[in-house]
Length: 266
Image (tube, rainbow, N blue to C red):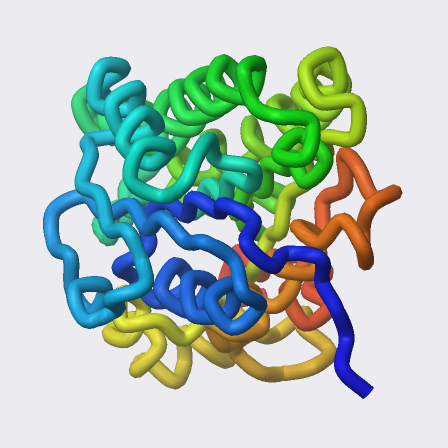
């Protein structure tokens, strides 16, 4: 039995689309018949080979660049964006406590991971005001959060704070605001734990780290990009999730928390 997601010919914009989760999300929406616009920051990567995808570059920290991204997406891909997937983000690899973190690191992480989503949502909602009734029917914002936003993450407080703000600040706020523009519009967040992406490849080679990271996870496995992408598609679907709004969906194998110290020190 085939399942209609109701996303055929729906315009979907995915940020950070050249990376692991973003690229898999692009592929998932393509298979569902959506018109996909894929944002990237510097490197276009495998997006260059996807002829049916509109790939656009933008620095999401800059308001003019984000406004131009939204304008070009509408111009080059058949009209205003209906579904916005805010997937981009940076996770500084250096382990730095709040006490030792530089203001420049803090500011850059929040500019990318929090101000960027704010600018994207602002530009998206502004454009949505002039969209057709049909385009508004499928209106949806989906944030990619993180277990760091739920449990915190020692030595990565900048990242944890930005994700928590998306999950528990913007998601419940915007789900109440979007309906003044699109009465059936919805806002949700998909929040993965560790996912086997090229960016995480080096970290996940450390067996001791992985064991510690999965210590409170019943499924005892690292997620895959498709685990996240499929849940994004389900939440974007007006058929499957038309009455799902303001939800934080944990895609983390049942994770219940973090170990502060290696088991041998507890």
